[in-house]
Image 1 (tube, rainbow, N blue to C red):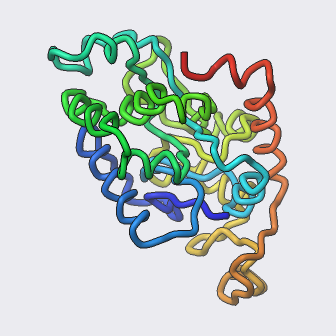
Image 2 (image 1 turned 135 degrees about the vertical axis):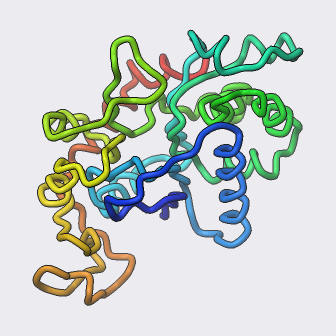
Length: 271
């Protein structure tokens, strides 16, 4: 079982991001290359340089290895709110599609099956929606969500959560607030494997490295494949498929159990 991300976050410098149609086009291009060159994977995770892990890859792999391979983690809603008028240009569209539009978080964990449908689609839905979402200022907040919720094979595979910890203004602005030391405990208690967003070299990143990732400056987060000693255990590596989860996996397990509880799971899927 493998998970792939389009950005692997290992450091704290060079925080950059990009928005709009360019982002969804770049993501789809990356997925197409992944489908062409790599066969053995189950989920795709999109991250930006503003994201930072709250647990090791081993923790994430350990919990995902127990989950059904058809689950897509994608936060979505039919309540477009202010986005209805500020993110979409006025165009003529199919009235049936108009009532099925979805909006949500730009950060997703998507299955190989669903992404194959988006890239190699056996009907015109992904291509039709891609043309429609080129008129959105933030197409990445609606494209995958709308494709998934308008197709019978995928609308019941959604887990309405993006596996990120975010902190918002009240009322919410376009982007979440920057996270600092005062937010550390809430991040940990959330059980989310990722958080965003962070200022460059903020002290909270050092605290995450030390207390959650056991990562020393300039080195990898240690995993089961690291068999060295001292400050750089990953300088000596063993079996690459060995997974040694930490207490972080328990936090993620608790979150996943809550999300998949029968009283929450189906009620929060596509409507």
